[in-house]
Length: 357
Ligand code: IPM
Ligand code: MG
Image (spheres, rainbow, N blue to C red):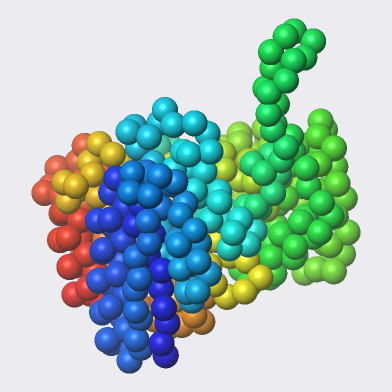
């Protein structure tokens, strides 16, 4: 099969890790008889430098015309003092919205070979965990009305959270369907003891749960969920939550795997076109040094094959190649932590994965 993939390499280590994923995709295409073509577009700080805006229209149009999008990372200290609407992060929100990517899938799974890297006690993680966070991505406080005004105490700033029935229902549908394909357990996380949006969220999720009698459904308040994630992460299978709670909880979930450099993500909408990116950021401190761990981006490419192109066995092959490279003891610097051993560079790790394919 033939697919056109838009590449948004972005800033910092973005270009290095996207190049790695492209090399792995090319090898996969060769092995399974497909053709992938790649077109790069600017996004983030590099786009601001070249075009004066973090998200040029050409980038939006290019992504819309592609079959799917692979993103590296955006941002860096160089652009931290730009006004809000020119910041690299704004481009990320802009492209999510422009592509209608209302679902964000963030798997947080403990790799057996990397168990010692988890900051949680051995008895908590000894049996591993495998969580899928379904985060709503184009609504809530990220996209609500905001501004500055004069309030009771003078100058104030405000952001607002709004969720429509339609937005909650469509993310709920994805979450229940995802649970059906996994271990049929879904936890909806909200703050229904305080927020009106959460009360509507909870009401709709409850109603929907009646359509999925096989799914063991429960809801949990977000503060408790933050605590439960470190107390007993194994209790979770699929989690569904709002944009901001999902942002926060997915960082927590990724950290307890001990290997944020390993975690992939998929952003999906109503069509098969998605955007795939590693969970970690642009790591400006190691940019351009060939030290970055490419695995999260490689696994994001595998998710693209699975979710956008329905190439499940190709995705399995990439994931198996990563597993075998880790099982053989190969590590990039971030995975080595303080342990002894010689870390592989970004390109060396990529080579190992390609060999294993
Ligand atoms: C993420 C990031 C973004 C978000 C930022 C960079 C806007 O933290 O993808 O989790 O908050 O969604
Ligand atoms: Mg985040």
